[in-house]
Image 1 (cartoon, rainbow, N blue to C red):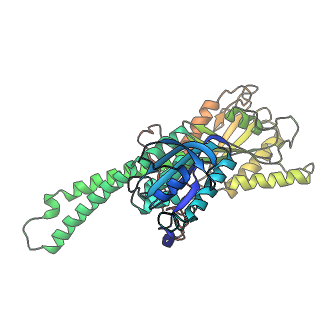
Image 2: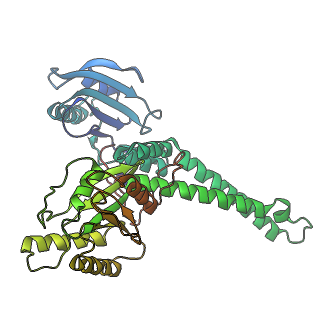
Length: 424
């Protein structure tokens, strides 16, 4: 892919679908002839010009704003042209095709193609150009994808801090301090005959302690930032009619799942992403867990899928029905489910016992977990705080930034971190 880094590229830079405005972006070197063919005039750098975008016969495809950013003072570090037209998919496809056509046409002034080799950009290739041309570092390149994908305002702010370079600056400070410490150690080893103890004189131990403290702070911030980006997967489990679908609806604040008194109403997983203090939680309602001769084939499949979701969860809400908690058969079934959960789940996955319908029956005094009413909303605030604790969220979220672990696979796609993110 790097061998094609010198080729000019073009793409629709806005999301698919219809909108008021759509952007076609070109990046390369020497765009003057292409600009003249598309806009019939020379553009002043970094000044918007309202022009018709013309086809090969000189007929206007659309009218809009054209912006020219000469390199290296552009997003990619190359010459960049942006055509801002109306956001209909047909209009943007016509503009994209016209860019490719005009680039291949022979320029009368030079007798050569206006922009040889212009091709459609691969997903993320504009950001890759910015990375390869030292306009941004790898952490900032990844932050662009995180900012686009942010599902909460807190995640967007954290990604914006990384994009602004906050994370990179902190890493550079740590790196420089570590290099300085290494220099002191090497000086002590290289000059053992000197009476000066370089390590003691420079308070190397104090520097190391401060460095470890700074590293712990950076790690804590990145872990919290990763939580804002990824969130946690929370699965609601329990016997039929315990109120699982009602709890999902209460947490989401919308009627997402069908609620009836008929056992086995929920037969497939229902998922909704909610946010608590900016942390995304992917909450999944599952079929009621039971072992009964009344279970038909469809419900059996639903129960099997429920266990599959439970095994892949970061946290499980084990829902108990307080109105039936004293029934021997119900209590025995709950005990069986609890035993299966302890067998199937790793120790790192926390099971929160939720005692539902506290508006109709009080929770047992010895009961652990959270008592609530999905019907009235009582106890929901306590459950939300419990979920934040399980996720590892800390209240002080200012100064967080989003960072990623290095890609596990050596294979690289078109974006610097190996993820395919779109034409950005």
